[in-house]
Length: 189
Image (tube, rainbow, N blue to C red; front, side, top):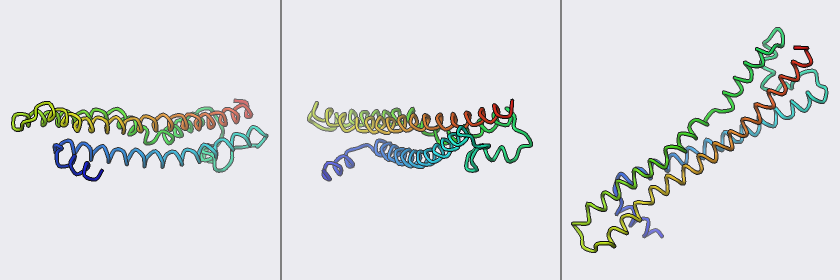
């Protein structure tokens, strides 16, 4: 296995190796971002869900840990505009990092494809210098396709993580919106 990796490293074009390094950095960043945002969104989701439940069970206001509490404390009166502003602010906070995930999901396959194309061009350039014909081409193309596979691999994770965070954000924002509508209904707005 280690011999295969060393052989791949020695045979590959520097651009292909650079692409694989770049995709590795993408992969690490995507996983770090997902883990950070997933656990923070999970915590926030639980806070808003509990706050909504206590509000629906008869509490007079949202819990102090709810996102809405900051807006309610700073306002003179509760109105729709205040809660719309709070929901927009919460949406902005909940969707942090999702743009990066969507960029990685859409660009990683093309970055991998770029590495593959350069490696295949390098393989064809070496055909005239060596003998072996089809075996040289097959080996070169097989090694080149690793970059495309790596790009697709990274994109799958980025897209999946984006969808998971998007859903968790949507649910959290819905809890905040239900709390605001409940408070407005109680105040006759």
